[in-house]
Image (tube, rainbow, N blue to C red; front, side):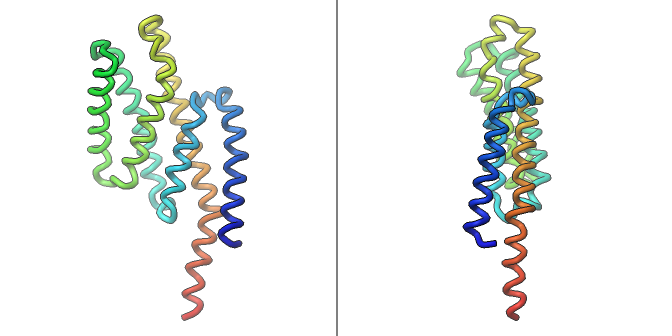
Amino acid sequence: MNKMARNAILAVVLAVVAFFWIWLFDYLGAKAYWVALVSFGVCLAYGPALARSLPWMTLGGVVGTLLGLLTFVLFMLVFPLYYGLSVAIAGAIFILIAGLISIPKLREMLPMLLVGWGCFLGAVARFDYLLAEKPVEAIHRAVTTLVGTALSLLVGLLLAAVLDALLLSPAKSAAAEVPAASE
């Protein structure tokens, strides 16, 4: 199969999966449909290195989501409610922690740590008003958003892994066999 046909199939499959994910994400508890698309895009950018980087990327995405929850808790419950300053301080702290955690596998883990962290904070930002009005509900929403964001990240990673295995990897192995056959 040539490259243009693979890319066309990839675009169609992504559009169909995105349609169903956007339509059904709220019923699945995902909380933010765009998280799966962001994680899929990051995976697609890895190209041939995706297969060996995927376990580290998965770990980075999940840990990044947890760091996002801790950032939310720190700036909403611990720091004074000077919103911009509190978010900036908490964000800097946890981005530093994300960088330190990912030192052994920086190129694989850090992008997904940041994706998980940022996507969680983006998804939970819809509920930050609850802390002032209904603090008990805010913590519940933060926890369900944590689970939903992690679910969306994992769906994006799974979609990228499946499409890499079915569409992209066979092309890579066929391209690798052609030079070997000419020798």
